[in-house]
Image 1 (tube, one colour):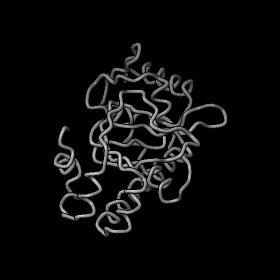
Image 2 (image 1 turned 90 degrees about the vertical axis):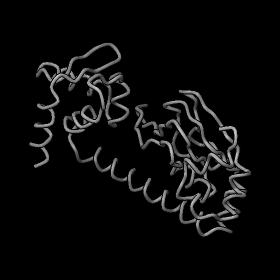
Image 3 (image 1 turned 180 degrees about the vertical axis):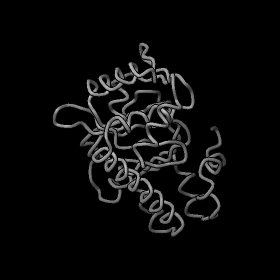
Length: 223
């Protein structure tokens, strides 16, 4: 990513397609940041200095409940921006949650003053920002609705089946954060799935032993 003025168009083709001079100037002013895994991108109560557009990697955004449990709100992946960052910049407010790098990130950092100026000057950029904001916000609402209304067994099985391989490299704690539950609850339900022969439990990983049975379970629950 040495030539950022050229490469950003690869990661954000919809924005590049508008050929807007204000957008081009904004991206010329953007810095390229690289963040290793587990880096804290922002903390609860911190101010927002940059609009970040993720080129590769992923950031996990979560809240801490009063009991100290982490609740995953959403993830920011390649080609996306952070809905809370957008909200903070538009509302001139501080972050209500924390962001942590899940896998090494490379992103374009646009200073807040440049972001605001480009919003004023470019309809294309406004459309890009608010479209992404609405999509990400809808995803957060859908996730909160699922946590509130869908039973833990169904959410756990769906999460396991989403793995592209039969060995999911996640701890019970990481799964609990993703599911918006407590580690003890997730461990108890995983033990039950293990007794059914659907999964095998290893240190730091979960093996999927019977995808067909888990899919059948989900199909039955969703009728």
